[in-house]
Image 1: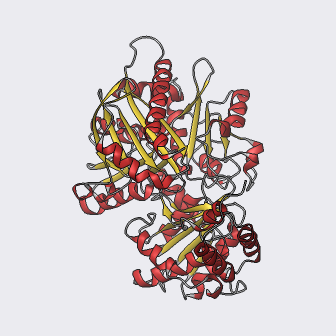
Image 2: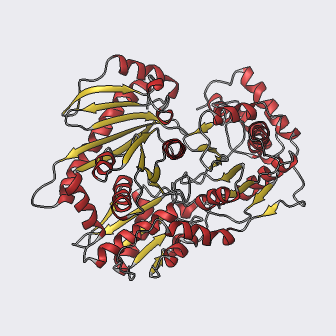
Image 3: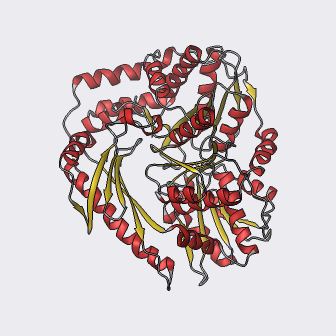
Length: 575
């Protein structure tokens, strides 16, 4: 059923956008939507305008200022050029690295960015073939780039596209730079008027092949000298993404040659084999890999997401049952490994996002290391790491967030699923050398430092504009209990930023602490109209019986609590 007709102001805005759009396909698409005149469809094309979220820009591909398309990419590139010329003193001599993943339109959007930047007189180095985000970020660091631009939507569904931007320090752009850049983009000319340098005048090509040995050399410095079994049976999937062949090559260079690919997911496919979402956090994404791992009797399963910056891990139990490790499991394993036997430094630093497990703090303290929490996103994790390294002499060892993102050392100043895969294989191989499994190592960690369980749930909001007022009511009258847990205090991250470090600034995030040390966090997504809840609960470790059974029971309780917390807000906002 058709909804009410769009207001005249919106129709005028979109009519002007059509006139300024250089792409005949999106002009025709938006013209058809405009002729249909349905308010909801027109509004979705126009508002909210395309903007920076947790990790760069991301939106559905389609027509209009709120979508990712040729016109919005041109204006983004023009604004980026203006920002670089205004803010980076050597912008006309330092290169801009431009690369892309294998999504539909990726190469075309990358050429648009290249052409718009070169038209502004900026030197551009282009990786012309699809490439993993971590290696592109590494290339930018190695070349001293003024900016690295990666056209990717990471693990989002095939209908999405996006762009990640990294500054001269090799870290994702964050506040206040993202707001400054957004202002330059808003002030860009209409897309049709933006000059694009002729594609026949090629930017200087950049080969990742030449840089990959350096990347592996830097990574090797973070691989502790321990006894490891090299005959480790690994099943690997890139989930139709660009980490193939780079992750298997990194594993082979580290001594792990027995890597079996999931053939059906090893070819580049912008539709991701029909998966609703290629996010390896979702159980169905690993179904084919788990079937192969079971059939082969493998000892480890590794999966990257389509742009190679995340890593999912699974391992078999003593009974042959395969368990998927959470992002917290892997982050804690990596931290314990690197702090126990990694490169020594007197002032070691580990960093995690505020929605990741608090257990990292206890683990860091046990190893005499410093722990910092940040807002969600690696732009904040590395803001903390880079600042504390420069100003206080800390040594960044590991950063992680529960959404399968890990950064080892300073090789890549963002999450990197390739280096993480090598380090996880090292942990599993060292365990095998001792006659243990990866799950044995994880169980030992939890028995030493305490078992925590976690759960994350999300819900799509029909009326996201109501969320701020709903959060206000929740802050004014916090719940006394959630499930069987008493609520001891509520922290509102929209307030009090002046009392916290820069990487724990203002964010629409509420943290409810529970009796016994557990906590619940609520925050809206940075890129989608969804509300997310995160729960972390301490669980008693049984002296006898299965730790994994205790964990499953605890996870079920955490999931129920996450759903209840969502309902506190979502029911009032409108699901």
